[in-house]
Image 1 (spheres, rainbow, N blue to C red):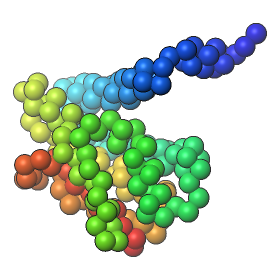
Image 2 (image 1 turned 120 degrees about the vertical axis):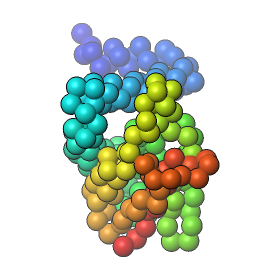
Image 3 (image 1 turned 90 degrees about the vertical axis):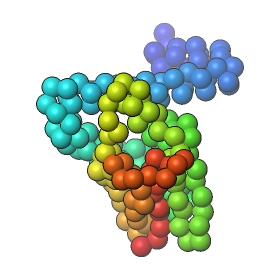
Length: 176
Protein backbone atom coordinates (compact mmCIF):
# COMPACT_ATOMS: atom_id res chain seq x y z
CA UNK A 1 0.00 0.00 0.00
CA UNK A 2 1.28 3.47 -0.88
CA UNK A 3 1.94 5.93 1.92
CA UNK A 4 -0.27 9.01 2.29
CA UNK A 5 2.29 11.34 0.71
CA UNK A 6 2.43 9.20 -2.44
CA UNK A 7 -1.36 9.22 -2.63
CA UNK A 8 -1.41 12.99 -2.12
CA UNK A 9 1.17 13.47 -4.87
CA UNK A 10 -0.84 11.27 -7.23
CA UNK A 11 -4.01 13.26 -6.44
CA UNK A 12 -2.29 16.60 -6.95
CA UNK A 13 -0.71 15.54 -10.25
CA UNK A 14 -4.23 15.01 -11.62
CA UNK A 15 -4.61 18.82 -11.66
CA UNK A 16 -3.38 21.18 -14.35
CA UNK A 17 -0.32 23.32 -13.50
CA UNK A 18 -2.61 26.36 -13.26
CA UNK A 19 -4.93 24.62 -10.79
CA UNK A 20 -1.92 23.44 -8.73
CA UNK A 21 -0.76 27.05 -8.48
CA UNK A 22 -4.25 28.12 -7.40
CA UNK A 23 -4.17 25.47 -4.67
CA UNK A 24 -0.64 26.51 -3.66
CA UNK A 25 -1.52 30.21 -3.36
CA UNK A 26 -4.75 29.38 -1.51
CA UNK A 27 -2.72 27.52 1.12
CA UNK A 28 -0.19 30.35 1.43
CA UNK A 29 -3.05 32.83 1.91
CA UNK A 30 -4.54 30.50 4.54
CA UNK A 31 -1.27 30.47 6.49
CA UNK A 32 -1.42 34.27 6.66
CA UNK A 33 -5.12 34.19 7.54
CA UNK A 34 -4.32 31.99 10.55
CA UNK A 35 -1.45 34.32 11.49
CA UNK A 36 -3.80 37.29 11.33
CA UNK A 37 -6.56 35.57 13.27
CA UNK A 38 -4.15 34.58 16.04
CA UNK A 39 -2.84 38.13 16.17
CA UNK A 40 -6.33 39.62 16.32
CA UNK A 41 -7.35 37.19 19.06
CA UNK A 42 -4.31 38.01 21.17
CA UNK A 43 -4.72 41.72 20.44
CA UNK A 44 -8.38 41.68 21.49
CA UNK A 45 -7.69 39.77 24.70
CA UNK A 46 -4.31 41.18 25.80
CA UNK A 47 -3.74 44.32 23.70
CA UNK A 48 -1.65 45.28 20.70
CA UNK A 49 1.65 45.34 22.60
CA UNK A 50 1.32 41.73 23.82
CA UNK A 51 0.17 40.57 20.39
CA UNK A 52 3.12 42.34 18.77
CA UNK A 53 5.57 40.78 21.25
CA UNK A 54 4.33 37.29 20.44
CA UNK A 55 4.15 38.02 16.72
CA UNK A 56 7.71 39.39 16.67
CA UNK A 57 9.02 36.31 18.49
CA UNK A 58 7.28 33.91 16.08
CA UNK A 59 8.30 35.77 12.92
CA UNK A 60 11.92 36.08 14.00
CA UNK A 61 12.09 32.31 14.55
CA UNK A 62 10.32 31.76 11.22
CA UNK A 63 12.90 33.88 9.38
CA UNK A 64 15.66 31.45 10.28
CA UNK A 65 13.55 28.32 9.71
CA UNK A 66 12.38 29.51 6.30
CA UNK A 67 15.83 30.62 5.14
CA UNK A 68 17.34 27.20 6.00
CA UNK A 69 14.50 25.38 4.26
CA UNK A 70 14.73 27.49 1.11
CA UNK A 71 18.53 27.15 0.90
CA UNK A 72 18.08 23.38 0.90
CA UNK A 73 14.97 23.22 -1.30
CA UNK A 74 16.33 25.60 -3.95
CA UNK A 75 19.90 24.26 -3.76
CA UNK A 76 21.39 27.71 -3.15
CA UNK A 77 25.16 27.41 -2.77
CA UNK A 78 26.74 30.82 -3.42
CA UNK A 79 24.58 32.58 -0.86
CA UNK A 80 25.29 35.95 -2.46
CA UNK A 81 22.91 38.87 -2.82
CA UNK A 82 21.32 37.48 -6.00
CA UNK A 83 20.62 34.15 -4.33
CA UNK A 84 19.27 35.96 -1.26
CA UNK A 85 16.75 37.71 -3.51
CA UNK A 86 15.87 34.35 -5.09
CA UNK A 87 15.23 32.91 -1.63
CA UNK A 88 13.22 35.95 -0.56
CA UNK A 89 11.08 35.77 -3.71
CA UNK A 90 10.29 32.15 -2.81
CA UNK A 91 9.47 32.95 0.83
CA UNK A 92 5.94 32.49 2.10
CA UNK A 93 5.80 36.19 2.97
CA UNK A 94 6.85 37.40 -0.48
CA UNK A 95 4.63 34.92 -2.32
CA UNK A 96 1.65 36.23 -0.36
CA UNK A 97 2.35 39.85 -1.31
CA UNK A 98 0.22 40.49 -4.37
CA UNK A 99 1.82 43.85 -5.16
CA UNK A 100 5.59 44.15 -4.71
CA UNK A 101 8.66 45.29 -6.62
CA UNK A 102 12.22 43.99 -6.33
CA UNK A 103 14.64 46.50 -7.86
CA UNK A 104 18.42 46.26 -8.18
CA UNK A 105 20.01 49.62 -7.34
CA UNK A 106 23.76 49.45 -7.74
CA UNK A 107 25.15 47.03 -5.17
CA UNK A 108 21.87 46.65 -3.28
CA UNK A 109 18.36 45.36 -3.89
CA UNK A 110 15.29 47.29 -2.76
CA UNK A 111 11.98 45.57 -2.11
CA UNK A 112 8.90 47.78 -2.03
CA UNK A 113 5.54 46.43 -0.94
CA UNK A 114 3.11 48.57 -2.91
CA UNK A 115 -0.08 46.98 -1.59
CA UNK A 116 -0.37 45.20 1.76
CA UNK A 117 -3.36 42.86 2.17
CA UNK A 118 -2.82 42.71 5.94
CA UNK A 119 -3.00 46.47 6.38
CA UNK A 120 -5.87 46.86 3.95
CA UNK A 121 -7.83 44.16 5.80
CA UNK A 122 -7.24 45.94 9.12
CA UNK A 123 -8.46 49.23 7.64
CA UNK A 124 -11.51 47.51 6.16
CA UNK A 125 -12.35 46.13 9.64
CA UNK A 126 -12.08 49.62 11.12
CA UNK A 127 -8.78 48.84 12.85
CA UNK A 128 -5.79 51.19 12.76
CA UNK A 129 -2.72 50.52 10.63
CA UNK A 130 -0.57 47.98 12.45
CA UNK A 131 2.95 49.25 13.24
CA UNK A 132 4.53 46.11 11.77
CA UNK A 133 8.15 47.29 11.54
CA UNK A 134 9.35 45.37 14.59
CA UNK A 135 7.73 42.13 13.42
CA UNK A 136 8.80 42.29 9.79
CA UNK A 137 12.28 43.66 10.50
CA UNK A 138 12.94 40.82 12.97
CA UNK A 139 11.83 38.27 10.38
CA UNK A 140 13.97 39.77 7.61
CA UNK A 141 17.04 40.28 9.83
CA UNK A 142 16.94 36.64 10.90
CA UNK A 143 16.24 35.43 7.35
CA UNK A 144 19.24 37.38 6.02
CA UNK A 145 21.55 36.50 8.95
CA UNK A 146 20.76 32.79 8.52
CA UNK A 147 21.17 33.00 4.75
CA UNK A 148 24.55 34.79 4.91
CA UNK A 149 25.83 36.84 7.86
CA UNK A 150 27.86 38.98 5.41
CA UNK A 151 24.61 40.38 4.00
CA UNK A 152 22.34 42.88 5.70
CA UNK A 153 18.89 44.44 5.59
CA UNK A 154 17.70 47.96 6.39
CA UNK A 155 14.17 49.17 6.81
CA UNK A 156 13.68 52.22 4.61
CA UNK A 157 9.96 52.58 5.33
CA UNK A 158 7.41 50.66 7.38
CA UNK A 159 4.23 51.44 9.29
CA UNK A 160 3.67 53.33 11.48
CA UNK A 161 5.94 55.78 9.63
CA UNK A 162 4.33 58.24 7.23
CA UNK A 163 4.36 56.64 3.82
CA UNK A 164 4.25 57.90 0.26
CA UNK A 165 1.45 56.90 -2.08
CA UNK A 166 2.04 53.43 -3.52
CA UNK A 167 4.35 52.08 -0.79
CA UNK A 168 3.50 50.34 2.46
CA UNK A 169 7.03 49.29 3.28
CA UNK A 170 10.46 49.34 1.69
CA UNK A 171 13.50 47.22 2.51
CA UNK A 172 17.07 47.26 1.23
CA UNK A 173 19.35 44.25 1.09
CA UNK A 174 23.10 44.72 0.75
CA UNK A 175 26.63 43.42 1.35
CA UNK A 176 27.95 44.55 4.73
